[in-house]
Image (cartoon, rainbow, N blue to C red):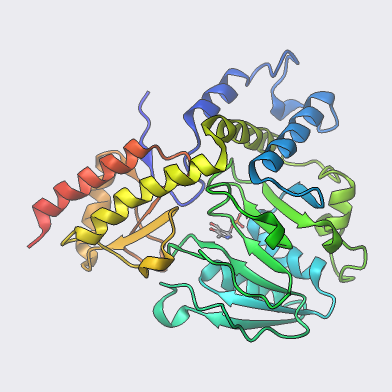
Length: 361
Ligand code: PLP
């Protein structure tokens, strides 16, 4: 068997231990004689899977009792619409535009009401997080929306915005469970799981109970109503059962690693190895303002497009795959999520040093 070092931004590398366990259970899950893929979502066995998964994510994030956890479908994109549909009362949302995903969410909200862009870092290709200490928050805003970790550009909110009392909604798709969070500071936290947690097809929504309302916008599809899904325990329709099962296994794996404090330490150490090298390299440069750097997604360039292409090609041949930057940015990006071992980052840096020695002037 030969596994590569996979630096994909998502879907992304998962813990080997989890994949092996799932493979061993593929034909017979826990004495049921069937795969979780073949199992009724109303069965006792699946009920236990989803309930255990919920409890484990509650433990990991220390989710307060007045928050619901929903395991839904449709990825993060569906939440771009579900958030305004469920949260709009005045049909006003304030958006902080820190990249393509925040922008897409902002544009989606405009379909249902007024979506204000109250801050943006587009002037410098989203290479920094704007100052959010004194934002022009609309007094009628139903919420303030952020994309907490910007997968494409490699920035992260290290301080949450001052929402002036308004509900904070956060897309955490690319930093989910990479470090502890104070859930009580948010109204809604959601993330597609295909980076840090599991296979594409599941989006997890953590929502404060008082924000779950029956009087959602009348055009809200039933399947997208938080109240309906919350009442049904995420089983309003057939959920992405197999994906939820894998998420559950990753939650157990995270607990075994020592929880989110331990993951934060490990992720910071991994990121430091790469950033320290980028800061001293004569060939490779990071593209993000230092204080806003993400510890999950690390974009970098040589400044020469042909050399970038050559690097990506040679890296791939050496077993370091998916290092090409997002098509809108170019250059390279190393995504180093929870399941990327430190050894993968160390070896990547060794490879970069070798490439630098061969190509730097
Ligand atoms: N939000 C963030 C931060 C992302 O990184 C992505 C995808 O990579 C998305 C949203 C879109 O996710 P999905 O494809 O699950 O809709």
